[in-house]
Length: 441
Image (cartoon, rainbow, N blue to C red):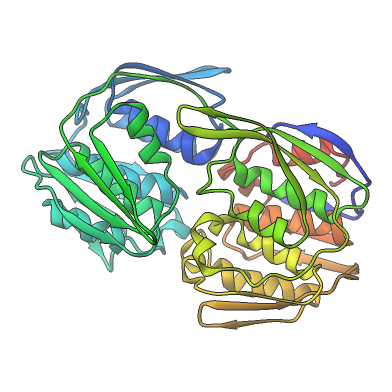
């Protein structure tokens, strides 16, 4: 039972305020950009998770000094392509798709060969979408079926590229942007809108970037070769982590919650937009900007008259990590909810579309998958009393946390395996649940 969580009781009503861990996307990007800056960079509230810690370990292996204290982290960068490591050095990305794809762009100009590997889950994921543009830059990547492990053979003679990214993947876009930093000339990316943290960091660091926003896509132009100085960053809270507590509050009776200091970048707030359309009572207060990122306190009130949603496919890139949570809310909503163009959901830490369907079936909620679309018939009176066991989900941290929210709001007795999976993105998840009155063993 050491790595199994037992939940036997629903959570009681609560009226509280909480903080959640630092934003994972920003934490990883700060570390990667700091490693290429000239001089010292310092971050406060850096996410203390496996994904971020593995990023710091990898940066050290590239010859960059990293000092991690209780309250802050310092990285002593040596400029663009200022790494120092032995030939055939191995970097282990573990479970982090963000780090694995972004670091490939950073390594585009390295003279020595480097091997990138990951855990079982990450090693099953397709890397062709970053291998293809890097090949155009002149980078040689050796792999078996475009999967980890990869051997990266950079080149001093990078050439700028024009590339169309049509999936709406922030990881692919950011990989290309990072490769462009080391490339003379202008690299041009035509891409579907997606998370823009990398663009905002480039702007904050006054790098040579130009962005034109069209109706359905962005044009990003980057002129490479410009060095930049180290920088300090106070990482705001992660909306993906906050989302579990938003849904916990919506589905709990007579409860209110304030989640403080959250990154509410508009490329990440799709879950708030959708839940508000479903009659969720969610409000953003104390709005402000920090280094280009929008930050606010999120206020949530219980909602007992949730309605179904016909989710616009254009919003998917703004809520891809939160979709399983939204599916849980749909299970308690009146009517039939519909989602389209969900193929990206199959390429996360696990096939989250398939697992979400399996999860709803377990709850007795009728649902239907059709290639990459999803239909859910909600039950506003859904209450559970049976015994449930959740396992075999490839240690996907978001599926574990989803199960906890379902157990605490819907009832029943739950045995949820692999509780250590939260260390990937939100080590304080269970501690925060306890602060709100959640009981488990």
